[in-house]
Image (cartoon, rainbow, N blue to C red):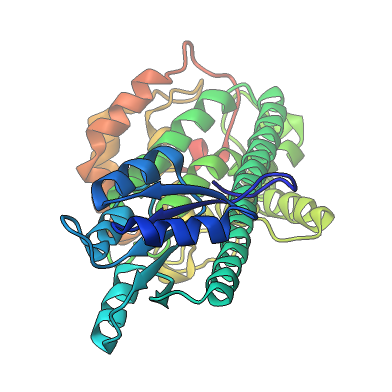
Length: 379
């Protein structure tokens, strides 16, 4: 069954309880097609399942299973449901024809059969079947190609993110585990909020995956911060803080240039730009770089803000001790609706044990000597 080679004969199954009818049809069809015969419905179902003919000529009125019964069973079997069925019948009532078509038959031929009509209708249905098979094969091919290209694009995205984050880690020895922790914190928050009416449209499954994949790029702008500030083993001066703050704009601009080079918008870069540029914004408008407030802050950046500050609070630095998990949670709860979107902060509070577990899984083995702006501003 399916697409036929040039020298392959289409297979026709003729089903009729009357031997003379089968003989007439067989003799008519054999010069052009391979013909199989069945004298009752049970035999027809068995042959159809085993041989999977290209078309079935099916008598309606038969002892035992009627043609209607046989057609119904053919259409419920995955192996035979796509085989076109033409009913052979002496019935001419409109309701009988309608019933057959509803069951899935493609045509009716009335008895006694007219040979030219039989040949024309069989040929027409076989051409239609060939077209349908071609389209199915084409669709299957296109689906496999889409899946393959999607895998390729995903691999490119992951490789790009890995390359950029690896570069960031070479500049800042505190970055690596911070990136891993904040990435997983963001996923926990996104999963917790996926059914929330304020966030469901953004945090569908593809959206949550993009946020998880893009989160490691939120601090990519630190690559552009001078070493004497980025790696300073102590608190920054006010002037140095202002320079460090530019990492948000530097990150956004670098990612925008990458997207411009690609010549097409990329969803993961859009999310990465949001996080890089706006993760230091605060719910009440007191953050930077633009002082965005409330809903004007992208959802991805609101999630990262919670993740970033929590990690800043619990991480030890040469100029401060890390807060305990309980202290960090209490300090952040006090900033609900001030620094953080209330609903995002509530999601954090409901998942604080998951945050604690992630912090333990990706803990820093020893105190970092680097310096990140979030760690200065969170203390």
